[in-house]
Image (cartoon, one colour):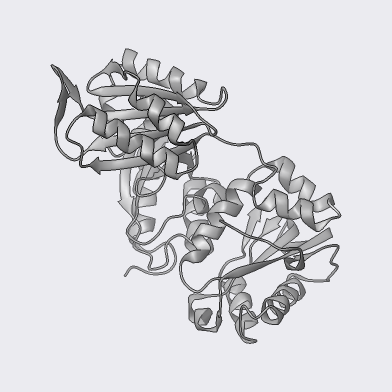
Length: 366
């Protein structure tokens, strides 16, 4: 979880260039004891490789892997530029978040930030706000509307359906969606059988979200198979689109796909359409800004609608043409990305994306 203090927020800054903005942030990171003085060179080198502008007026300058040894402790500094800075051609940044990360910790920071900053209203507020506390609340998600969350519990060693449900409930509780009372009520309830080995349990909770749990071995409940347990935690009506998709999947005879690697993506998207393929990321440091931007660039070369889900992450499917969304997937080396393309050039799109990933997304194959 990103933690910010008032001294990390630089309000109302005014500089002439992107380089000046980076120097300002690097200086503050150094003063705070997070990095050594030479870290600024890594931040500038990163910009020379690829600009770190995310969109919505937000930039996230950070160092290269070659300068990680200069990072003493992971942390951030936030600078607000009300008049704006041309970060890249035609792209104006109003807030820059300087990141110092000792390893792949920055992916977690980026993931949290991108989910918050993907909100256009929040980004606009960051430009205008005049107090540090409000910026902290926006960046840490304290003022953000709660989105539907997704969790997986794959190959859970359950002996029966109830143990699988208990595992899903414990996963939701550990994520802070509910408390022991929620778990007790779930265990006292009877899950609904949807068909094709898929079961659904539901509970009132503090956070709306879905847990998809699959057993490590074949299970049965009476004469019925147990291939997957869907746990719906409902705090509001945000889950209704996914319930509609469940009905559509049942009508299309595609419920069984929920037990596969793209289960959560299917829950969000509904019945399968278009073409799909899965590729493994080989970049040693995952999809940070540079390879992430290259992936988005390749996706934008095609007219098809392209969605991508991190099968080793939350499983949430997002647009492959949005840098903020792609970085928000928190992709590390070895993670599997499931792509689905729908359109006239869908086949070519998947082929092009696969080739780009195999080539290292601008960082060279390893």
